[in-house]
Image (cartoon, rainbow, N blue to C red; front, side, top):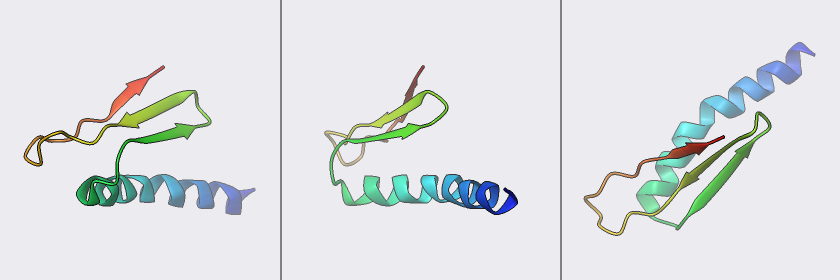
Length: 58
């Protein structure tokens, strides 16, 4: 059980890095779903200078 929790914690820890890399490469729109009922939608910015803002919808 502890190993599973550690694995989940590691994945959650990697998410900001993955999101940043995806945003830097501008692959497109990303939708990540977490089992807690939260969906984070990150849309590719129209302008390279525009910061990408993740939105959380319950």
